[in-house]
Amino acid sequence: MDPSMADLNSPHSMGTTIIGVTYNGGVVLGADSRTSTGMYVANRASDKITQLTDNVYLCRSGSAADSQIVSDYVRYYLHQHTIQLGQPATVKVAANLVRLISYNNKNRLQTGMIVGGWDKYEGGKIYGVPLGGTVIEQPFAIGGSGSSYLYGFFDQEWKDGMTKDEAEKLVVKAVSLAIARDGASGGVVRTVIINSEGVTRNFYPGDTLPLWHEELEPQNSLLDILSSSSPEPMVS
Image 1 (cartoon, rainbow, N blue to C red):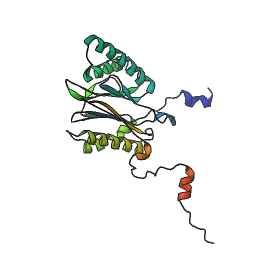
Image 2: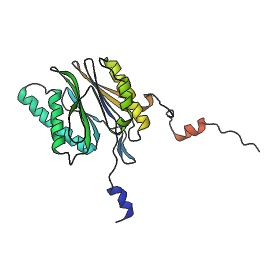
Image 3: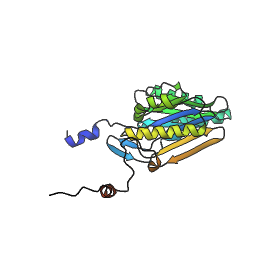
């Protein structure tokens, strides 16, 4: 085989950071925007938070193709479910549909997801659906390659009964931390707030995120970095 083709046929690592947090009155979902294929950034501004119904959204990680086809199927089934019952599907129903498709195709799919939303029966709910198709109800869920850096942070920072603003600030801070440490996470931060009043989408550009240890200030070009550092004069 041509050695130049070996890298094309080898498995690619796919990374991301997705987060779901409950608060007193609803849920906040968040994600970065970098879609990577190994060392190559295929899309730096992708949207990893997908709408399933008016009140339920899905955070996607792993294979983009796998997670997109799962969300398409679930959206179709939930649409039929809503027509038959004459009312919106609950978050639990949506999470179990995601779980069913993931479990029945666990040998083919390479994706982990977080289902979050609000319904009139149980309020705001977060469900994690990791690889293999298990469904776990959690007060907060994190996924993707960036989640490895966030477990201790959430153990320290998450608290029950947060306000909407506190929950969104926590999500943005956590995603920015993952972006700083995880090479497969990056770009911008997108959040979705879901509660009894509806859905609010927010967008945080990369240059507005907090900087962490050893991170460089945003620059327009490499020339700006070079010009900002004044070299010491040579001494003969």
